[in-house]
Length: 276
Ligand code: C5P
Image 1 (cartoon, rainbow, N blue to C red):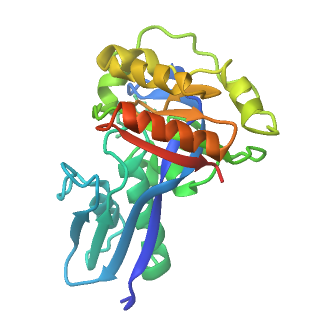
Image 2: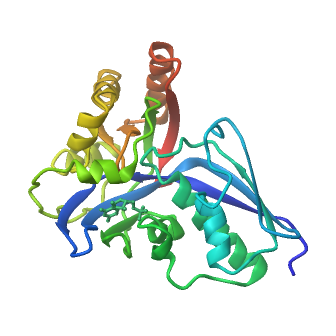
């Protein structure tokens, strides 16, 4: 048994685009998505213990399940490791479209591989976002999430993430999805900077944004407020409610984040760099 503690970082996952291109017979949707990771995320520590336990702390710990609904515990069980104490410091909001639970589970699996020498064969069985979160780098995600292709040529993108505090269950957003155009994203060019990325993004979509705004109209407010603060582009990530705005520089992003925090002191607002 491993005797030292292992730390693992679970970065926020951001879908720069999310095109729904079809539907499988089992109801799962076919996706085409450009995914980047932020420099902010949850922190995990794993240490050998008698039994499998999870302790949750941190600024976003409220309401996070401590039982088997938590993907971090499910990941350890799936790997067959029942002698580990997991401590999870939550910085990311849950049910927020930024892969919090999946990224935590992927971090657990990375740590268990390093420290316990075990791995899980079919990580997708734990959730559609698991394969991309295992990659934890800029990626094109397709299939229902299980096809993950590395993408190069995306520069570090200064950004602000905004979540209005509305937890949205992913199945509800997919269920509210109306007929959509079904086309995949355009070919991904090598971007010189955030401006050229924002320009390309303006012709791409997140097909889950309209149904999510129907469920939680405040998502529309997040997008408008990001644009009003000078975002080059603003869009929702995943099934929401977190939205991101891209900025030309980190100082522009910092100014926008400060202004938004003054306007909405109860929202979760974070300056970050995507894809660094
Ligand atoms: O796999 P995961 O538990 O993250 O998915 C949550 C729900 O989101 C699924 O039960 C399904 O309703 C929906 N979903 C989907 N198509 C995907 C991923 C998720 O319809 N590719």
